[in-house]
Image 1 (cartoon, helix red, strand yellow):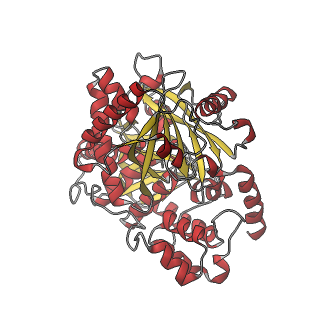
Image 2 (cartoon, helix red, strand yellow; image 1 turned 90 degrees about the vertical axis):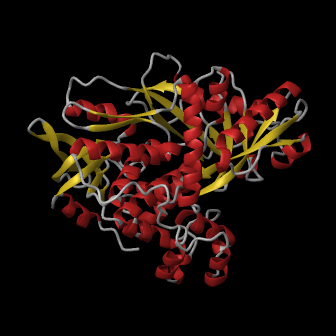
Length: 512
């Protein structure tokens, strides 16, 4: 894997007229860049902040069909929700295949406090199995109280009747975006982060270029393209109104908040779905990178909102956790807290939790193609539809059809389930470090270690699996331009343990 020099990428941005310019470096934008590049189209991508700095790194880390959507489909006879579940389950199978180092099956337990609840959960998850069809990871199963407590010893057991286990998948969202983008670069895409789009140029009434500013040094650039795709998630309406001020807003925004607790809440690496809340939602208790995520909320939001949980949301999550666990949540430290904005296609619904997570691809008055709505699990399908749409809109000439259903992402080559053990033996690594490297970089972990030298193998921070070599790797090969880029989206420690991230930031500053 070659080094990725941002300055060289910036020079290439101004050197040609691209077939496609993608604005937005999250899941959808990265997926579009890879799809277009793998069809032989010339593609550039610019991102205002860092790659995956918005919604795409603030998810619940689940690749799933959506049990809640299935319940809505059945109870309301909602065909749109049913289609969404089926599509998401198909995409789940594809993603497990193309990025097995980043996406792994996750057993999820649903507790029941009455025999009726147990029967309801069993039937619902049997339907979920049927919806998955041939893509089923493993059949759902009934669990006794003892089996539930074996995975979650601190569950409140006095009313517990048992539960049901089913499988979805867990992943590293920010590193998935990085992997998509680096795979796109391998196929000729040109990418640059910290580049803000401030306006457009027109030719014969159609957009022909974007005016972008380098937020790191203030330099201005023009990127020419035959078609421009708006993949800016919650900020899509802003870009649409840059195209034409008369464009009406198409999105309703919702904030989803998460808390991070220690590993003791999910000691067996299983997830727990809390099946009902005071506002009719579900909550997840999720194992992730040696910690436990609690989430998520779903409250109306605006683009100006601070992306931290409101005090009421934090209390909401802790209160519901307290209802299901026989542990005082007040005695446990919250290690990190964060929130993300969901871009939902606007409807007449007043409750954002009830809005279907569908997506829409549309062309604006001057040719701007906007990808609106959607969810992480269906990013690949959204990208495929967006590129199909752009090809027709701009009369592009791809060299072939979409291949992203089977295109393995960077890091898949050389990855095997036994790779961590090989790294432990070959490089003398501790188990937690080896597992972290394999799950973050896949087969590239071997390359990272070989380039690092013995000093690079040293642990950066006690109690965390990150090593010194990852800092240089992030800067030289993953376009990490700031400490925040490294801590939040390359190593992820800033999303897991805020105090540890501050200590590590100080150490990085000393070594820079």
